[in-house]
Image 1: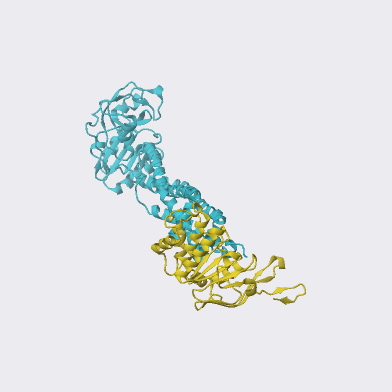
Image 2: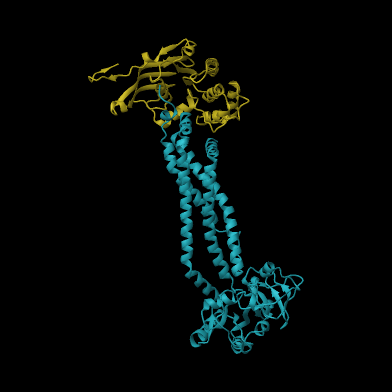
Length: 232
Length: 401
């Protein structure tokens, strides 16, 4: 359901005197529908950028990101927004919950921009599923870190996405909560039939996956050397 | 429900600035409507307040002063006219009725006006309406020391049937000038919303023969209120008294003279309107600056919404809608400000002139003003909305790894 070919993203770098520098160059990557895969990578390796490109939050410079037949690279921003709202659930390392909204409203907003619109019963059901049925009217600041992560999971899954992207989802949790959160994410994705692409540098997390790839092997940006030559 | 939810939560999150900004909008909207309505309503009220008369005859002087003095009971009298002059105009075939007025005294600052019973029994102060005495009272009799109180003055001074009072000399209250004569209230007029409400009415002879008044002027009157048989007669009398004569002034038509007054002070209306427009602009600017100042704090929320799939135009619309809602809240509260301010202004006008302004009267400005304010606020929201439109999602949400 996700097929990436010759993906390239450059950024203008102040360190390179404003010249554009390649951050992501992924020749090929794919993920089957319903499959779970993990990418191992250190901080600063471009993992989040890679996920943001897949989600359509960032526009790629070249290549193809085909999600269920639609090439995100060829689409305009508005169309990418639409696809993200309809088919992608995104779990952020810092959860990115809206602090001024209740737990239920956070999940409802996760559904609001998709084609199905708001389904309050579904939002409640998903929150029940992650064990927060009794916290619907609480605000994120009134929840523990682990509970906030559960809200983020519920929000990502509320719209029945085909693909869930998880960026260091256990990075802000202790080991026990991290394990629980990961189990919840995988279980919820499995129940929803969603593919899961998770990036992490935590060996404890990565060992839960059968299919793990090093992002460094996948991502081979060309770097301009002092001599002016280019190497991968 | 997404947009209302986003707007509602944003307003709740910034409740204090929302309230302060809506408050300034309310003041601006209220002020705008008050300025407009006071202008419209006061002009309407004054133009309609001819108290049933077509013209006024008085001593030589300003027509406006004559009208203000005899119809609105404002300003000083330009002088008297003789009994013969009064008799002449009363006998004139073009005159339907001529009601004499005699002025010169007050009671605690409220004018005492001497007149004849016909003013109350024969003249319609507005079409189809004659003065009426409130239950339990009666009109003063002939030349007795009796008085009828206008409803406003009766209320203000707590006067009721059977009460007595001693007039003071002059039109301005001076405790040292009290007359010896004692007058008894025999009735209180039903409210008319005209200047008659703020006058104490006594028989004509009462003023003419009051102790201390010039005995040589004992038959003089201050002015004569005139009803004409036909409007064209007014021009004939105007020619006779104002062009051919040089002793008296014939003020005709009353409404045109008042309209002329409003024309002369029209610049003041325009200044007030300009001030109101400026206040409205400043209020819209406060919406802009209030939302714009909060944009840094809400960048992250906007980026999260975008990450959830909200289009740029959605967050743009949310910010503009928020500004419009602040305007709407302010405009709604502006009606309370409007009613409060107008009631206060109407009270002052009533106390000063006796003319009543209808606080609840309708006018297009009562919807154009608030609607314009909401539109201005929405316009003010465009600048911060552009900022929201441009929020970079990936950059705002997390450091890249």
